[in-house]
Image (cartoon, rainbow, N blue to C red; front, side, top):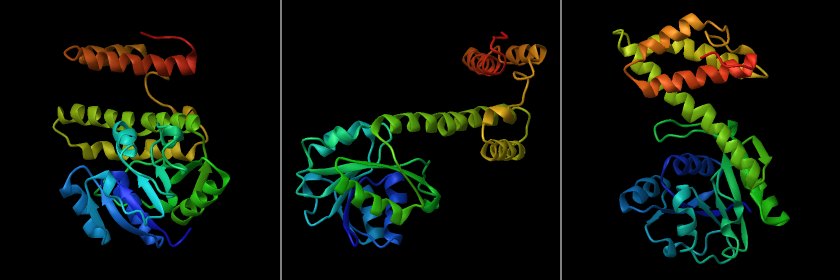
Amino acid sequence: MKPSRITLFGAGNVAINLAKALTLAGYRIIQVYSRTQESAEWLANRLSATAITNPADFDHTADVIIFAINDNALETIINQVEFSGQLALHTSGSVSVDVFKGKADHYGVLYPLQTFSKTRTVKFQEVPLFIEANSSKDLANLKMLAESIAANVYLADSNQRRQLHLAGVWANNFVNHFYTIANETVKKTGFSFDILKPILIETAHKAVESDNPTTVQTGPAVRLNKEIIEKHIEMLASKPEMQNLYTFATNSIVKLHHNKTII
């Protein structure tokens, strides 16, 4: 497949990081689509590509079309593209590969299990990539592309990817939300988020270095320290939603480790 000309649909976090990885691997991104001209031009200018805002305007000389856009808009945008033999890929963990069925002849999924942002450059070679395609030939071409940008490439069907995406939400999105709550709590003491960073880093290290993070669980819930737990719940009396969240998380830990509830 290489060298390939790629049209990239999307100019958000995933698209930006994927574009960097593809460019470093020697692929040429010829177009960038976004709903707004400003976003399309922002990324296209950095790639010496053409910005488009109409899906129908994609360049048919492209070998690959990658859709790195919001799941809610994916099918709508795909329906506006007239494919002409390109390998069509999306990057979603939650959307079936069949979203291309009846629209493209060659299609698949290139799903990176990672959190991305515009301001941080991710080492894409370390990102697990999960791939799926509608034929053995397309899978071979997709595998070649995936292995040129990442060292860890795995086959995963749509059901597996949905589970992987759910796992990612637990491990990343919900954990970061808890960081936000912890930050709001520590600010009440007059200290900054910085004082929590050592415990965050140590917790992450223990989980990553363990074969099973269940074995490194600490805290009042796993110790069945009901007195401390009740004091914490009392401290959250003015925020019933936080009380409910604390109680749910505590009982979840106790249930897992002791097969019972504590509060």
